[in-house]
Image 1 (cartoon, rainbow, N blue to C red):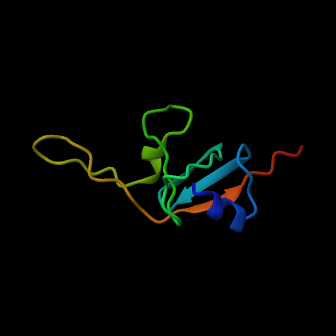
Image 2 (cartoon, helix red, strand yellow):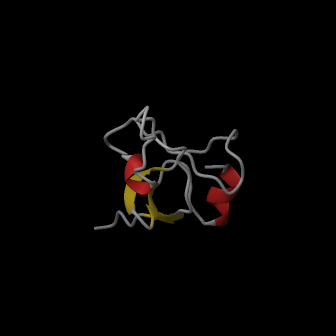
Length: 83
């Protein structure tokens, strides 16, 4: 995420966060990336420990089987790690 976005919602880089959409949620570690536009979240989709594909539309091109361009509305919140 953009550092301004993280600061606005009170999350620091390195903290555990939950990213949720209407299709599911994943937990991962927040990271600041200055190349990400404000208001955007980027999650690589190739890691089993943060399966971003659970959050987006599962549609494939019917002929080539290429995934649809993946974007959707998402909620970001801190994960309570106490206790």
